[in-house]
Image (tube, rainbow, N blue to C red; front, side):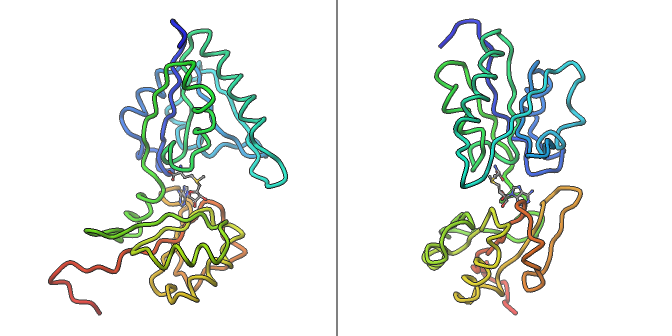
Length: 240
Ligand SMILES: C[S@@+](CC[C@H](N)C(=O)[O-])C[C@H]1O[C@@H](n2cnc3c(N)ncnc32)[C@H](O)[C@@H]1O
């Protein structure tokens, strides 16, 4: 580990509402001279927009593009981004990397972390994940007592989704987008559609909650998820 290098911070910035940052995330974000964040192909950054009001004009900003296409490996892009951040860290500048939700929960920061954490002092600041925020926003307790909870990326094949859902008491299905129709078919086959809840862009200004049976597959964005909460009922609660 280099002496006198900058610190690398992976900052969980929560699911979208700028008030859902931790105090630690806010402090470290505002103190860092360099702020890096993922951008989409069109150059816009959801992560940056979440914390825009907290950034200072004198902070150096580093937009990082990582492709999410099967045909193109993202690894060279992570290599390049890590090299870029290392230059600042070697120059003793702290770098805060913005991560939507929690950095270690399907976060792209993990690929920078593995490339840099042995060379530079590194700290990860946990964030409120979209899963936790969605349960609160939908007003559904997610898991009780000894429930087994499963998180499933929608890209998995239908058979695997079905097998994992069969053994779970509660579940969340993320990364929906164009996979919604397949997931719908699996939930239908397992008799789970009545329990399924759907939310888009939870806690963001354009949040949408749509009854599951009314979701139009062609409109489902990447930032959406399906939640199947536990069926367990606390004693004394009458079921309908
Ligand atoms: C690569 S994962 C990142 C998860 C993130 N690190 C977290 O802790 O929530 C992206 C997926 O998380 C879900 N997601 C993230 N933010 C969301 C939000 N605000 N509302 C609904 N789903 C969200 C979507 O399913 C999306 O496809």
